[in-house]
Length: 153
Image (cartoon, rainbow, N blue to C red; front, side, top):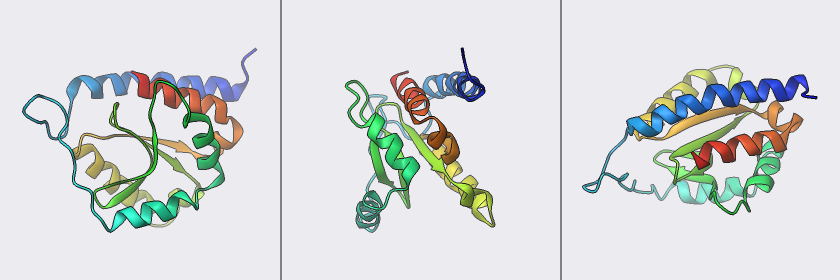
């Protein structure tokens, strides 16, 4: 029997996957001469920051990372620097960024800065998926399965 939480997650995945499929067809971002994505230059100032963030991950990030890190077919990076930002999780093969948002993302100027960040990442051809930290805490296995399914498409 499915719990309410599982139904909500399944509905979330059902909503995200068709949008992601359109993203994959539409491309976006810069393309190289062979049609593949062009590599983005690392901003060196973010590499030390990303390394520091890897050792200071939040509990929801750790729970998700422990479930996706050893997957045999999907390679996901944690605290990955891209341009002026450090992404919580990034799947390069699918060009997908997974952001784990706690309550702080709903307060103050954070929603507008998140929107600006999402717009910049979209301009780079990176599809952003935001997952509430609460969802990870309540069902990390379900969220990890959805993330892996998203990256395998």
